[in-house]
Length: 397
Ligand SMILES: Cc1ncc(COP(=O)(O)O)c(C=O)c1O
Image (cartoon, rainbow, N blue to C red):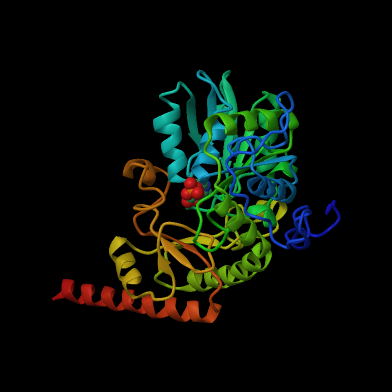
């Protein structure tokens, strides 16, 4: 069944895996088999061993490929497993131009693992296309984009980077974790490999760790399949099923969370104790127009700055609704502290160079009532204000 003409939210439900052709079950069966009986010595069936292919994992791989507008999808045991395997497309002596405020785990992989394997890198501010051009070397074989970036929500022009890459026969990777294909489809903008931490919005319930990769080019698909099977960091079937289930509600979750994120960003922006809000849905965001042209929305993640770590500690002590945790993209709102969580793998000097300050906190907006969230933030910020006054009085005594 082709679902080409359906809108995105319909495709989430009415795709090739709408029901199981063998039984009619309206849920993809969880196929626990690690191996498959073969009827012929010379001609094996479609499935032989589950690392190479498993029907449940394959259903998820088909669905994400279709949603991203690709030809092949690949499911991995985590976002980092997807990213690491995709980087194995490169070889010793190759060079990658990479966005500077990349997720901390990707930073660690590139700086501490790939360098050991002879793969070089240059970090750039990808919002500055001149800087990107200047970083290109004769051995540049890849561009690595995360947009909006983590945690400063900077927006990179995917089409421009992909065309630089095409000129020199390099590949463009895009980490699409923050927006998902609901709002951004990098393959349609010329990128070659789309990567996901499916741990986040795609599954959406803080109950599974998973990674995905999607390509459009069939030859690249063959190479990535070879690496997936060789490296073996594949997604287990229970987890593949959880991601498939989460995907069915992606549209309603993201739309609702984004609506709240816009209101919260506006609220925070107007608050005198908030020094800065990073969110591409605000008109004063430096890449607001670009975001509108390349994506269907600004998403449900934002970050904001309080004066310092102490103000942040007070805020966290009193805020009640969001969980304070390492992650994003879930039904519950999540606050995280990049300096000690997602970007702990980045040395402080590197973080500061990139503008990831100690007063910066990231918010992933969940499905709670927006007014409840705003009320909760207001009372926590009131405590920050009170604390500030106490400190000022102490100083003046
Ligand atoms: C943007 C981004 N990419 C990749 C990852 C890594 O994914 P995982 O934690 O599923 O390995 C994360 C995790 O937070 C992320 O935020």
